[in-house]
Amino acid sequence: MENPNLSLKQLHAIEQQGESILRDRAEIIALDRRRNGNREALRTLTREKGTKTWFALGPMLVKMPLSTATSLLNKDQVTINSEINKIRSDLKIKVNKLRDLEFESPLPGLDLKPMTREEMAAVNQ
Image (cartoon, rainbow, N blue to C red):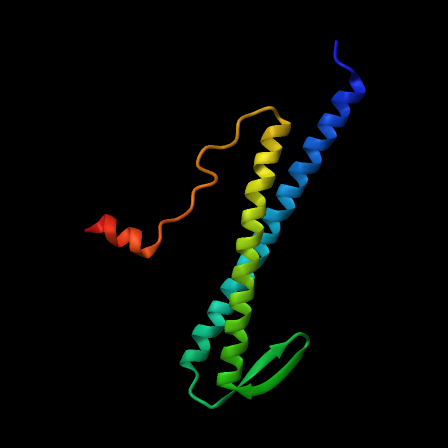
């Protein structure tokens, strides 16, 4: 019969890893919502007719030029995209570690990378 303490430690490690994965997924969802909000704001700013617009910086509303507001939103988009990509790459590692803890083989295809534009162009020819 197995050692009960060892089994409890194993279950605890599995639960901790699973909770970490769920936290990362929730973080990705929150960042994606923020990214979509930024996209909506950028789209609205392109339709704006004036030279200045109201912009929310935290709890404050500030009137600023459209170009400044657009550049701030674009910088935020780049930051959010890099954070999402970093979390997703870490998530793949955590999922494989969880599967190792559960004595299962790694998920096939989890480490696939998308094709580049050049590769897609070569395939389409």
